[in-house]
Length: 594
Image (cartoon, rainbow, N blue to C red):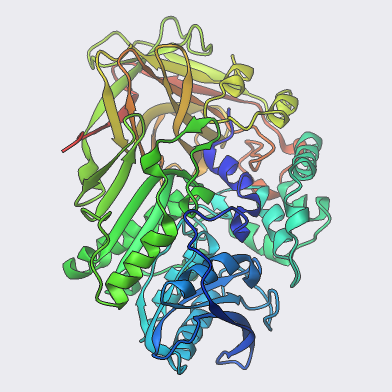
């Protein structure tokens, strides 16, 4: 199975987390007053260090923008210069335990209270007019939600970009961990920058691959890479959604209490789209109508880094000019609107803005759900149980009454590492590269729709409802959905992953009953919006997760992080699609241009 796009997105983060990408539309050089080494006291006596950027010759108090980062405060120097040159005081701050700040760094556990204290301290400074906001993406996007949870009185607005939601999309997705966790934990180990070490992709590929090929337990990963980590061990001791992960996020009551303006930003291929949209959806569900009306959402055609600095091309896909938003200007316009009584940003024509790839257009809707007109079912079928080959695949049929008697199956041996060499050499064009699918011919199930009779916009969330039967108590599934063009070219649209024991809930594990057919709902695909050309087909691929960039499940039903090759069990997975067990892929059809 091709590694899911979120693992790929995580590996692609590299130094983009530290702001190393060039900024779009930087202003002309403007005099800015810089103050390094500003000490911000916290309630427990720890001091955080900030670098402060102010407009040259500032006379009157101004709104303040803060970003709190574990990636070294100086990484956001260009952002500080931009906002100070455009009428704001900007502070870039090392979080607790990192850079020049005091205390000990414990990811996610500290940011809410520390953020509250920073906001209130900034609001009390002579250069601040009492209105404070936040800037940042990924970890700094999470910072904003954690800080808002604490209700600092002077927090005027937040703009969480690509916000990770701990326990949902990082350090695991749907309860399946990433080896990347140890790469990231090494980046933020100690107090100083580890960006050169972090950026050595061949090194990390080799380390992860060697653990995978040796069939060592996932719990040995931190020692294997040479960085024993209590944090990593703490994380994997909580392998499913529970109170530990809940403590890092917002409860429904805390979401309901938020009534400040919020601008959420994410991307189609953002590795933290699940977290960003989870925060968005949780607030939409819990908040008052008035608070919901103040929460705007932008979903662009971007990867994780592109949510802060959009690029014209990534992973083999080329984006239209309309996608290259000036994110600095957009933030500034939002801050002007919410803190300076300025005009509403012209880009925000409705509460939800989403980008349709293909025609390369921005579309608007009052809610995220309103972007989807219907979910159209395609029923899985095959001839004589043949659905294991790209060139002799099963079918996705529109007629619910079609002949679909029988089933398809694949066999997965966790000790099979034959794809590792090819996976290690995958190109940087993974969103259009079909080699991973071809490498796994015969070891997965593949279904194709008939060619589309007309151009068709798919916008929203796919869903797969599949009847599955296993002969072992557990296994992991990866599901990828592609658009196959009339010329045979491929574009990965969206993916989902599921551990069989969590088929009913991410909070409760229930072992599979071998030989019993059950309905599995794959309903955590990511949002996608793309117009498929006439003659295109939809490809569905479902198979095992067997890649060195994902935690390995040896199918025994035990504690996955502790299992090794000696626990491996070969599993046979049978997918049923007869009259009593109709398996179907539900395609989100977009409403089209208004």
